[in-house]
Image (tube, rainbow, N blue to C red):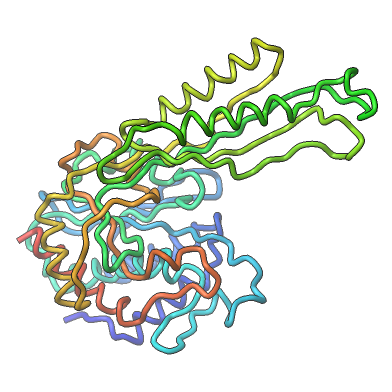
Length: 382
């Protein structure tokens, strides 16, 4: 009977943490996992997304139900590495915690899924159904990997989906969408002593952004689970010299959307408001750089109920079931699924540690999730 030892589980995680898949280079992670699966007779497929970025899909079992399990291979930049207590790309254990960029978000969950599949296959424990492993690229920036999997039909026959993002004490069953827009205002340069010979690109853009902020953040529509839509202007660039009128100003905006005020309506409002300003002499252009819809499910499924029991059994935690303001690959993977589709986000780590310096996952949680995921798969396919 195949059971990975704790030392093997730690070494495999260390190998993957050492791969610097910072918003790129996921192909090295995919190749590592592909070779690991091949050692145990599991076929996997590299799914190209761009010239340099790929997904990885692997399956065990056959027939129904089809359980989709997913995690992303990219991580965010470690930032100033001198601020880390230890090398961010060397798995380091201190006080029961495993430190390294991606330990929490979300290579620990990804390895939990992969090794669980290997053990199930090696021990012939999966007597019924299919488990489809979907490792994605580009989740941290744009979700291109999950969009490709959706477009190529990998979710068409899936009956359950969970994403192994960090959330050990809370099952996330719905989350807000995420919409990024780049708004450019074009003016005409001039000397600041003679502004009437030019057109200051900043002025109409500032007024436009304040109006959009009032329209969106002041909207009273609210989702019972996710709350209200939230708009934030996060980047503003303009001008290159203090005594010159700027001919260009660019702002970038992130909007966290809800079903009641969705991405399409927000985009339409941005564009119609720009048209109004342009009719008065401005030159404002709106570009959508990312659009991930909100995910709304009922949270009522045998998968969620079983997971609550397993969380209590293996972690000693009373598991909450909630919505989240953050977005995941489920925005793309669930585009055609109804509100009653069984979905959850549940994995080792802590949500609050995502993207932080000295990112870590509790070692005990990392080990416990192997048992949770295995018993969950077997419980859903019995």
